[in-house]
Image 1: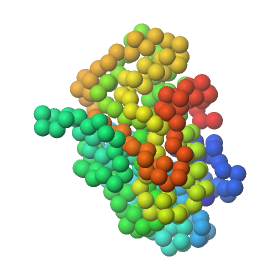
Image 2: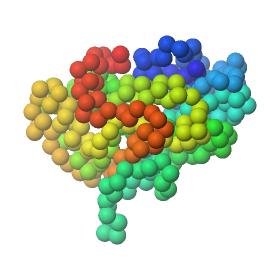
Image 3: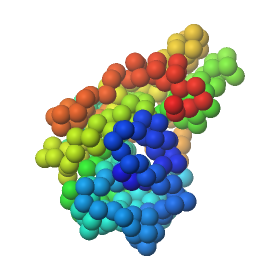
Image 4: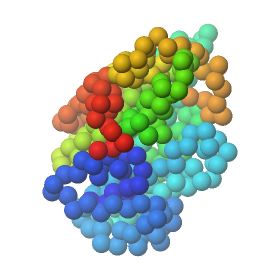
Length: 299
């Protein structure tokens, strides 16, 4: 199995939870430039029928993408398309990781109430509100067009949660000891996903093989549940034995960012279960595991 994006957060988690039957070939950005077809051809020179390419590589700087448009689309659209052309030619199977940001997830207005129903894979995405989301949606479409056997796995709010991790959970862990109080947005709802749980789910998907319910489809894989960032932060404080009341609610408008965040981007797990795959556990159970076993990060 070729693991593209092996140096990233999810790539590290996949390597921490390998399947004993895999011959794992991790590829970092130093070993493959997915935006360059020649680099892809060199890195995947031995790719053949029955092989799996798991693409965890992405441009994930949501705010940076607003101005670095060309690079975001090169990595998130052209890169998956290049990999898909390689898997199509070789008869291999591409599994491409995507995001909840492909959905518009707009905030409520006078004419449209706030959404409360999780998104299914076959729902219209609408127009993503960010360059990041638009580039990831373009990558889904480009990879499926180049290789219709491609499987798209959308996920959301991925974290490892170690005390040194740069993700949200890791950041809250550090801030708990540095500040008396925190203000965290309470009007953005999603599904926090523990990287190791997602990696285990991907391992199960790969072991299931490219069958009718797993190949050439879009599925959603997140830890179960729907919460706000504020609720996640309060839960982290609880796991650390700290008073969650020190985490104060605020609104998105209080902390404007270059890229708007979805107000609601919860992904339904029904497609994952329908494919015969084990649903990822509840987000709170996963957070407990992350805080108490992550140590310095993944592993």
